[in-house]
Image (tube, rainbow, N blue to C red; front, side, top):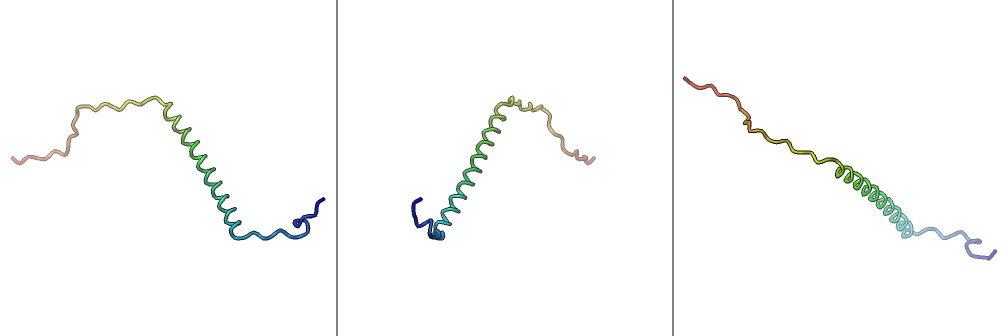
Length: 74
C-alpha cells in the first residue's frame, strides 16, 4: 500500500466547471442516444415504405360536378 494524499485526505470538492462539464457530457450523451434512436426508426420506416407496392393513382373520369340548378324565369 502506497501512501497517497487521497488515502489520508478527503478529495477536493468539485468546482463549478467540473460539474458543468459533467452536466454537459451527460446532456450530450442523452441527445446523441435520442438522435441514434430517431435515425434507426427513420431507416426502419423508410425501408417499410419502400417495400410496399406502388399504389396507382385513381384515374379521373370525365364527369363534371354539377352545381345547384338555378331556376329560369319564364
